[in-house]
Length: 380
Image 1 (tube, rainbow, N blue to C red):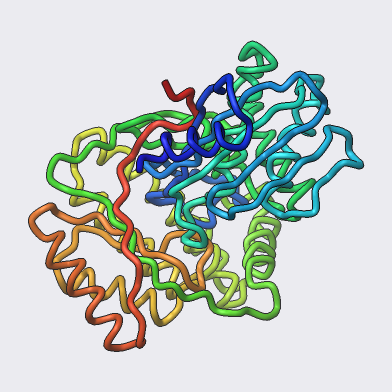
Image 2 (cartoon, rainbow, N blue to C red; image 1 turned 180 degrees about the vertical axis):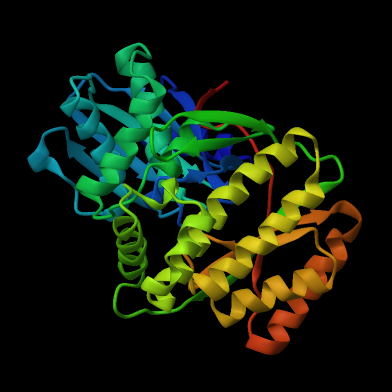
């Protein structure tokens, strides 16, 4: 059964008629630009064809009644701060309501049923898709669409910060709201300016290989890497590594610890790789895009040290099989590789990668095909 039909049936069964309106928003990938956001660099995400979809109908009360098909749970809550629900999944929706209200927007009670096909735990930002779906919908239903898109993304980000305990950046919600079919988005993390670049390869496709591994870590590795970057920027007298060239870094190499040097080197090179990939896409050079992806993986593995054995194995396998580009995607220490694969090689690559990984690690990775698609929207 199609997702829309599944939702409609559940909505009618639980809330009766009249019917509501349908909205959706997407998960995201990031083609390149990892660990650059907190260094005021660039990220390069796009929305994908995996979504959270909801049917929503204002109910004329001050109560929100929501049913999650995927979790098979019902929740009801009010719209005041003290009405926060206990269920973690419902706090995303409650948080969006509260963040709109805090900004002077309107939210009334509504009935809703939602479902999704964004894989959980694969680094595709299912939470941002959920937030963006409801932020977009409540803007349309209660605010005549007057809240601008940037504010919708910030509403999702603030929901994570204030109601879900995750101090995330803006990229996931930004991609989920601003996503456009056939385009990736270069977001400047310094001033939040952005630009669309074409991504509609005729001879390649994107596939994620999910290692289904997440290594437990001690000593807050993200904070340690951030501190390294900030130390180097401070020693050079600049606000962030965004302002440093590789030549300038090499000129002070002897004054830095080896670890700080390698962390900064990766970030500076990654900043430049994003710009190289943007230029390559404008001329349709997917081979150059692939080279940059491999270089990013090498940097994340050797200099930034956020990869792991399983992800290195998947990237090495991709290279050995002739895949155009492959790299770890996300914060690291587990999760997925993102792979740019020629159509003719796709079946062989997926079959071989799954078989080799299972033989070595005892379990099969999951495989997700993704197509760059539209972000938050009304569904007719």
